[in-house]
Length: 196
Image (cartoon, rainbow, N blue to C red; front, side, top):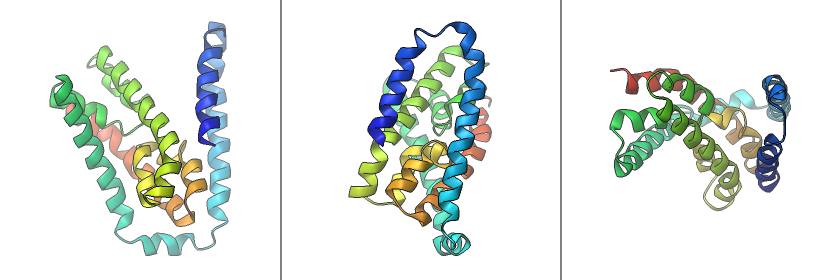
């Protein structure tokens, strides 16, 4: 599945060179429809688990600790790499605050700096591609809970099917809630880092 997804991205990139500019207006609608269908079928998969509420209650503190750990790790990693590359803490922190949500974080950062906006977009896209490639490996060799971390905010949408397929129902529910919590943090944290 991971290879198919990466191949689809590569083929899409190649096809994008030959598609007329007039087609790009329709891609937004097609992406929204595709994402809605994807989430609908993931919802069906989660719904098959009749013990959803029991699994949420059983997860206990993990319900909040997983998104907190992913957020702290994302920020520390971004700030550490930013320091090595010579970026100020506020700029590298803003990029890390995107948590993989490349569209929103780059839009929030754009008024501050177009260069930083492009960097945030690319960084978070690469994070998602790495997540797609690494989730099956992490789930198999390290653990189900740890497989949620690479996704960041996308753990509730684009990478959720991969997590669901490679883990179990309880982990899929934790993944969805982690992505939801991280997604709500993005519009708060990104401006906090940039606009002191």
